[in-house]
Each structure stands twice: as C-alpha cells, then as structure tokens.
Image 1 (tube, one colour):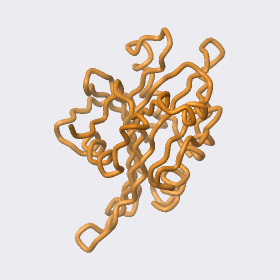
Image 2 (image 1 turned 120 degrees about the horizontal axis):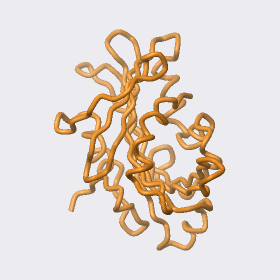
Image 3 (image 1 turned 180 degrees about the vertical axis):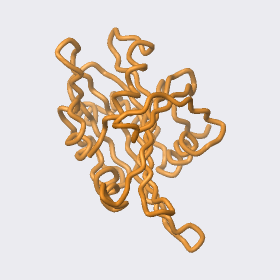
Length: 221
C-alpha cells in the first residue's frame, strides 16, 4: 500500500517511508488541480492570502505570500525554512516552547523532532512529534527556477522506548504540514504552507480547526 498523508495514521518506528514516498504523497496538496482550495481572508495588509479545503475528512488551511528581494532571496528563505527547520521554527513561532531532536535518519533530509506548544494559560501544553522531510529540487536547463519542500508528518514513537523517552511533555497532538518555497520568473519568492491538525485532549477538531488560517497567516521568520 503506497504511503499517504493521513492525520489519523502516524508514522511508526517500524514502518518508516522513504523521503521520496513522503514527497510524492505531499506535493499534490499544493500542486494538484484535484485539491480545491476555497479562498479565505487576507492578512498583513493583503499580502498573505489564506485558503481552506477538506482532505480525508480533515480541514486543511493554506497560506500564500509572494516576497520581493527586499524581504529576502530564495537562499534566505531556504536557510530560514529548509535548513534546521524545527530549530528555526521554534525561533519565529512564539507558541513553540521547546524543539527536541528525537533521531536523525538522514541528517538534513529526514529527521524526527518533538515540539512542545503552549497555546495559552487555559490549555495544557501540547506535544507534537513529527517526521520531517526537507528537499531542495535540482535545477536544469528546462527547469531553472529553484524550489524547496518541507513536509511534516505525525510520528508515534511509543513502540520504541528510546524514541518515546525523547518526546516532549504535554497532551499528545498531531499535525501535518506541506511547505514549498519557489523562485518566480520575476525574481521573487512564492511561499506556500498547508497544514491540518488535531490538538488532542478534549478539544474537538471542529472547534480548533477554524482558527488555523489566521494563526498561520502571521507566521514569519
């Protein structure tokens, strides 16, 4: 059975897909015409567009923004988003309290990280453990524009005591994310990120999910 992105079926230590399998499953979220995104609100003075859709019964949210050279080059964006992804993420997303490496399967390409989120004083802290694949596409004469991908998939380490001991403390939660940065013909950078999540505990997904588009619209680095 081919690997698929499924919030309800986290990756386990005994069933780890290859980076190629993860990318093949993830790219259509942002590139396929069969995924119908509904336009939503705009933020940051109209610079960040948000969209929503449903995949396998879960609500996904996407943000899209285009950035000129004054905001950063492709190399700047890749350094901030594709290199040491979880470490950098914890620096520009205030809700992330801790980011701990669980294991490096292929350093810089395929790693497992555990993230502790603090959603405010009312909620208990959440623990998200994710299998992260980063990939910079090779360029060619027919495809000279660079693009890079970061894919985060829920990972359940409970069957491996060593991995489980590395998880951050908190209510177990899950998220999927597919992120792409791409050079444009006019020298800008197109940044898109789509995600769906289940924050766990007693909070139903239909309550937490609608707030996601606004939350991801403010993500910067």
